[in-house]
Amino acid sequence: MIDRIELGSQTAKGGFDNEHDIVRKFNNWKKDKTAQKWLEIMGYKLNKLDSVTAIQVPTKISQKDIEKYNVSIEEYNEFVRFKKADAQVKLIIKIGNIIKIENLSLKKANSNADYNQIDKRTIDFYKEMWKFDDEIAFWLKLFTGEILPKEAKDFIGKIKPRENRRLFLDEIPETIQNKIVKFFEKNKILVISDLIKGRGGLSANWMLVTMKNIDKDSTSWILKDINTTMNFYGDGNVFITPRGSLHIGKITMQRKGGTPDPTKIQFKFKPCELFEIA
Image 1: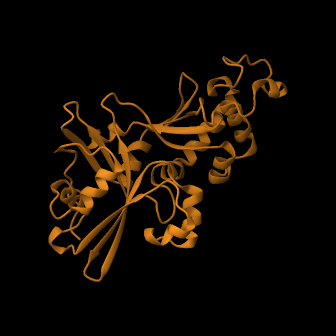
Image 2: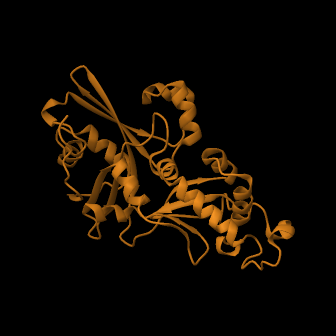
Image 3: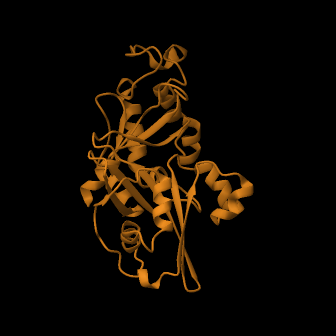
């Protein structure tokens, strides 16, 4: 291992805008200059590596297939429970008799700075995951529409919702708004870690963001360790926006809406912003 090389964002000829391309590049690391830069950023001396094997990790893994991902039964159960929606690549790196495992979370960035969903679950799942109380869960269910305003008239009193199907966070009582904000302020590190890194044997060590350039013949990329990534996206205040959603640093929490899963909570961020710290 060597000191991690801070190469920042780079541009490579040709396009590799999906996980299959990235797996292929890692598996061709002896010839692929971009893959060599990635390995150097991760702290590896190329002349010390014996082999690099990249495997695409699907969002769903059957229990019978867990061995190929070097995951135990306990880790599998945790993966199923806390799996991430984004694609991941598992690297199995051999240096002599030492085997190193690196998990990469892959994100596509758009030049128009679109958001990317990083997590989506029910209120009850997040309640169990982060241990907020029944009162917060109740008002968040009103926020997502899992509980309709007309079903909670005794609680919302004279509140006149902007929509009949749910409340916005800025419409709920101010005491509850403050309670929600304080909860996410207090548990910010846990929340950011679960949203970006995940848990268990397939949690991410790195985030690789790729963006195909307008000329279509080159791809910009940035590879950052997961702690740097979490610190970047977690930087900033927790507050309720004028549109009635919640900002946690650079991450937005909002009602999913649409189909399917209209009453789930979703968390979103802009992958292109990671290029700002190159």
